[in-house]
Structure formats: C-alpha cells, structure tokens
Image (cartoon, rainbow, N blue to C red; front, side, top):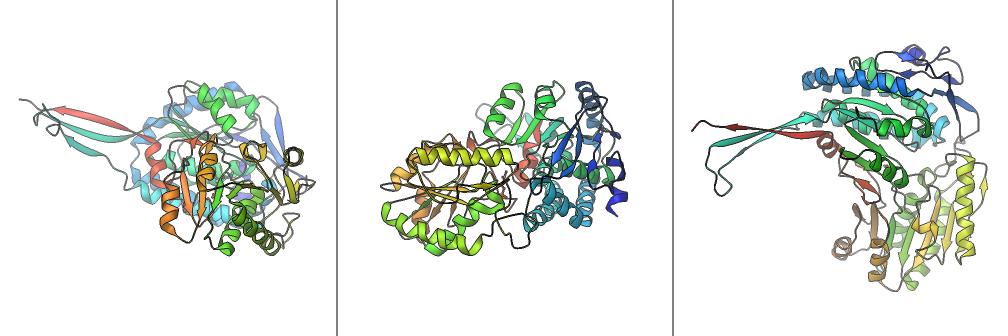
Amino acid sequence: MPADFFNDITVQPHTDSSLACKYFDGKAWQVSRSGKTVSVMSPADASLVGTLQIVTHEEIDEALLKAKKAQIAWEHTPLHARVKIVHLASDWIRQFEEYLTALLMREVGKTHDDAKSEILRTADLMDYFADEAQSIKGETLDSDNFPGFDKGRIALIERAAQGVVLCIAPFNYPINLAASKIAPALLMGNAVVFKPPTQGGIIGVHLTQAFVKAGVPEGVISCLTGGGAEIGEYLVSHPMVDMVAFTGSSETGVAIASKAPMKPLLFECGGNNPSIVLPDADMMLTAREIVKGSFSYAGQRCTAIKYVLATPEVMEKVIPTVEKTMDELIHEGDSRSPETKMVGPVVSEKVAQEIVDVIEEARIQGGVVLRGGTRKGAVVSATLLSNVTPSMRVVSCEIFGPVLSFVTVKDTAEAVSIINGSTYGLQASVFTKDEGTGLVVAGTLNTGTVQINGSPQRGPDHFPFLGIKHSGVGVQGVRYSLEAMSRLRPIVINKPS
Ligand code: G3P
C-alpha cells in the first residue's frame, strides 16, 4: 500500500488528502527547525496538494556534512550493489505507478497520459542507467605513442566520482528530471543532495523515499526542500557541493553558474526551439509534429516548438494545415477531464497571466492572433500568432506555455540566420522530403540537436541531449550523464628503467 511505504515522509498519516511532507536529512525524515513550510497548490483546481518544509541553512550544513562523510564509502561500494539499489528504486516507482500518476496530475497539472508516461519513463530511465553503468570503464594508455617518449610509463585511467552532487529539478518533469540526475550520480559513486522544485516537490519527496527504501545508505541521499529564495543560493554556493546538475530557466542557470565557480556543471536550460519548413515538406506530417511539439503539456517543455519559419508561399500552406490539425488533436480545458489530450493548465494563474501579457505585447507590436490569446484560470488557450518578428518576446524569450509563432522569411538562409542569432540553442527541426537537403541545413544550425521531420524532444533518453549558448552546459543522455557524473583519474606508473 502506498500509505505504508510513504508513511514516514509526512507529518500526519499519509492517507490525508493534503500531504504535510517532511524533508530527508540523509538519515531520517524530519520536520525543519525553521518551523516554516511552503504550500503547494494544484494548477488543476487550486486545491492544497500539501506542504513542504523550508529547511534552515544549518540543516543544509548538516546534510552536506553527512553526504561528504558517506560519499567515500559509497564510492567503494561495489558497482553491482549500487546497480541493484537503483533497479530496486525503479521497481518501487512501477509498483506505485497509479498513485504517483494521480499525485503528479494534481501537483503539476499534467494530463493523465502525460503524468503516467512521466512515471513509467522514469522507471525505464533508471533501469537503463543501472544497466549502462556496468559498461562504463576506464582505459590504459601507453607513453611511446607521443614523440620523445619510450615505453617507460603507462597511464591507468580510472573513472572516479565527482563527490557530492547537488541535483536541482524543475517543475515540468519533477520526477523524471530528478531521477535523470540522481540515478547516474549515485551509480557513479557520488552522494546526492536533492533540491526538488517547490511545485513538484511533493512528488520529489516520494521519489527520495523510493531510493531510501531501496537501500541507499545513510548520508548518501538527502532531500532538502524550500524555496529557491530561501535555500537556492546557499546550496549552490556551498563549499561542500562538488558538482551542480540543474534543469530550469536560462536566467537561473546563469545565476547558479556565477555562484559555483570552477565546479563541474551539467545544465539543461531554456529553449525557444524553431522549425524550418521547406517547400517540399509533407504538410500533414509537418503540421502534426508542429502541433504536438508546440502544445503537448501546454507548451511547458524546454523542447517545445516556439516558432515556425517559412517563406510566404510555404506559410500559406503551413498555417491552415496547422489550424486543421489543432482542431483534430487539441481538447482544451481542465486536465482532469478525460477528453483533454494536450492542453491542460500551465503551472499557475500568475504564469498564465504573464503568458497572455506577452501575447498581447506581440499583438501591439504587429503580431496577428490567429487563435487563442486568452486564459481561463491557469489554462491558456492554444495560441497561434502570425506576422511575428524575431525580436518580439514570443520568439526571443522562452515562453513556457501553449504559444506558437509564425515568422515569414525570404529564404532558408534568413531562417538559419535568425535561429543562429538567438541566445538559445537547444533544438531545431527541419521539415523536408529531401533528407539530403535536411542534412545540409542541419549542418548550418547552431543548436544542440537538429531533428529532421520530427519535433524537438529529449527522447529516446539514451540519445545525447544538450543545449548550447544559454540553453545548457554539458551533455545528458544515459551514457553521457554517467560520464558527466564522474571524472577521469589517471594514475601513471613510471616503470623502473
Ligand atoms: O528538460 C527537458 C524537457 O523539458 C523536455 O523533455 O522529453 O518533453 O522533450 P521532452
């Protein structure tokens, strides 16, 4: 029963409809000495999902000290034992899939399908990490390859843990993007200090319990909750943190990077992912990918398509096909209603209003609202804007909502130049029936990944996932994350002559 498994994590019995969560100090679930909590309200119906402890700086110091001490023994724990623990944690997630799906729907307003797929994807990802960790290995190098050296040395290059990894997850995939950091960090022998988002913190607390119950030893994982303002800066600049893994906005990423100088960083930040539609594109496929890419999970994905670039003749075909596809695919409204497929609420009413304000700003600047542009509570109607220019905020900033802009260009070269001029560089799509042309255009684009005839996306999760410019630092994806969560340790044997 979920109630038995999760009973330790709440102050009241876990069966209550709102969950008063504790934080995990590395050893036990605790109520913070601050006496302060933060409330988490559901974007779906504004009900109280629960509360999170706001930990004190002293409690952060205590958890980090435990982590520092425990990390060395954990790194020396045989890999097969660490692998077993991560597999067991993923088994627990599968075991409680239904309960966790319902919690995720309520806490971040995902539709049932989106929530369920995040839970199952998380379990699959953790299993894949655990399997892949077994093939991460060091190497040896001989010295005589380099001019001037004989065979007098050999380098044994091991993979060592980074130490204590601070894992900061965002609200949009609060369990998946937490596990995508915690699992590789643990597998590579690091201790983890997990800072969940506030919205999404309740599921984060549940995820931590899955690792604790799976047997992660004392001190090796902690879950420290509280708002970014109260604990964020203290955590990222803490001298006992050896590495920061973060997903969130570019603004926050830049701020964290400045407070964690000379530390390894693994960041996935914002994106304003464009799609170039070439004249020979399959319009039906293109429109379907654009609609899915723009509006699934109400556009709250770093990889969501935010603008489409095409020449005037192509635009004349793209816009009506996208509109027709929207009529077929999108059912707007309350995320709890079974017919809602793609567009549920955004994270809060406040954010919904900010999105509507940016749309209005674009309209005043000459953009044409073809549909949408309004909100009801936290639900922003799926919005299409034409006549948009790259300097308008709907394109130049990351709008975390269901808004798609059309930017007309004179040719492909202009489209490429607009994309490459952006401060973001996560992903881009090129739609064309000629994959050769697609490859050529892809080769000119400064983004982490280019998709040909598909919408931007992270998955499959073993593919490399990276952003350049303000969209990220380092590379994620199963093997790449495992490598990032470890460092090379060359040990050179100088042979007696
Ligand atoms: O941070 C990545 C996330 O926002 C997008 O993931 O799987 O929806 O492409 P995905």
